[in-house]
Image 1 (cartoon, rainbow, N blue to C red):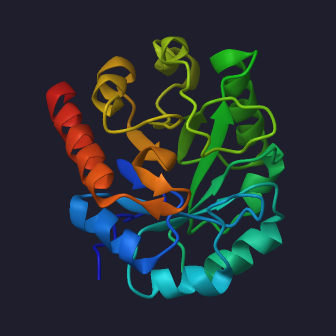
Image 2: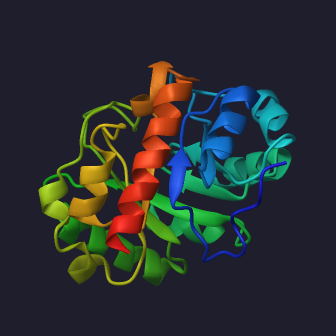
Length: 229
């Protein structure tokens, strides 16, 4: 079994491979050096996995984050329990109050797109989360694509993230959106995020990870993190 990376509610991943749909791809990700995988429970995603499929994966590995889009807290908590998730990632338009309803034992990642309000808008949303009773353990920044909830292959605007600590404070930032083996090193050196998250950038087709791309991505990410530490 792979190591369990999440030691507490404040521990978040460094390299996450999202949209995993098979035990083989999950094991390849961890063998290559990933800290976590993402299992997508959004029915509209080409990387959707059923509870049964997800359970078949998590019985073999650990450190899995469930990705949800506009699900209720009850649905999220039930799936997290059934599948033995270590964390959940909210990737839709969930209201701030929902975070406080999620099982406190789960690492909670809140995904945002920069949109027209940029980091200031995200900071405002986080303040609302704080007032509602729970802050996420990390913020994930993805590319803004109308009508899509991640996994688009489009690149987020790294320039807007130059001063993210000024807006977000000490909360860890995970960078997603159009990352791949060729640009991940530059992305880490430019933005210096706490973590990175990839789906389409290491695939041969939606939901099917390419072993060569997977290892190349993780190797490049690890090298870049060594460079900036």
